[in-house]
Length: 176
Image 1 (cartoon, one colour):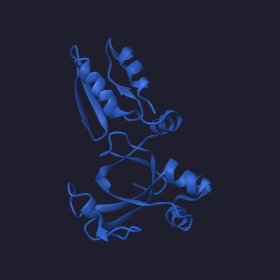
Image 2 (cartoon, rainbow, N blue to C red):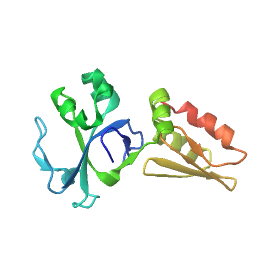
Image 3 (cartoon, rainbow, N blue to C red):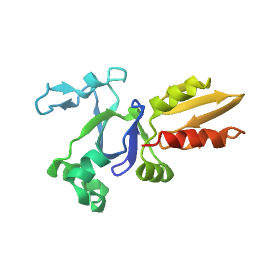
């Protein structure tokens, strides 16, 4: 993961678009954060399901952080994002590397245009309609009538079959 790449938190069923600011070799068990008004702790304390030797990736969320506090961030060189975000007072978030997923250009465009799909709500609706569902790493896998589809938080639907069109229509109803 390189500075400037767009990512989402795979532990969040309704993730917000974030940008990598810094990729460290420091493990989450050693990187200590000192939040304002909070308790000083290692990043691993907030991520108990991840290996403490995993490297830290520092991100900022686009809408609530970068766009709000540093509107010119898109003009900065990716190598300057970490320092620039700190200078502009953007809130930084620290994640284990494997908790994040890099988005491709199409996913970023869909995310920025429409917003994320409310995955929990979509899953509940499909469960009620007797679909078999499994939400893992932010991707909803659904199956009905022997057809299997994967729905991404961006609203992209993978899979072919006769119910793909109606499924895409349902997914669009849950776009943010």
